Image (cartoon, rainbow, N blue to C red):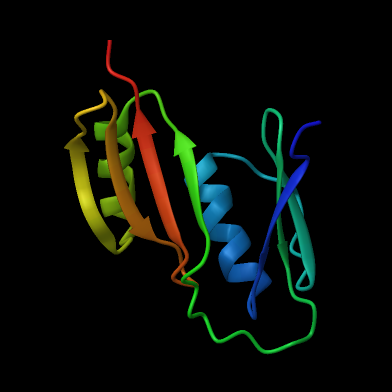
Length: 115
């Protein structure tokens, strides 16, 4: 069994989807205001408005992405005006992690595994 999809429910599909398109360097060719699927290598990320109002107090879930060059990604996030929670930091277990907020204030982690 594999995770086939992670869905972020939002009040503003366009803004959140455009953020992730830029973040992930992909384009799904859609401007749908209700549902957009962003396809990665294995797991699909969907942005969805189910018609209910979201409070954006997202305290129970976060997303983590493994990246090749965390310093390059950090600079990209700064250029995008993203609110950084923690700058790239070496962890005792060997990874370099950083965290930031997406437009809905979901906590997103980038991690890299230095050689």
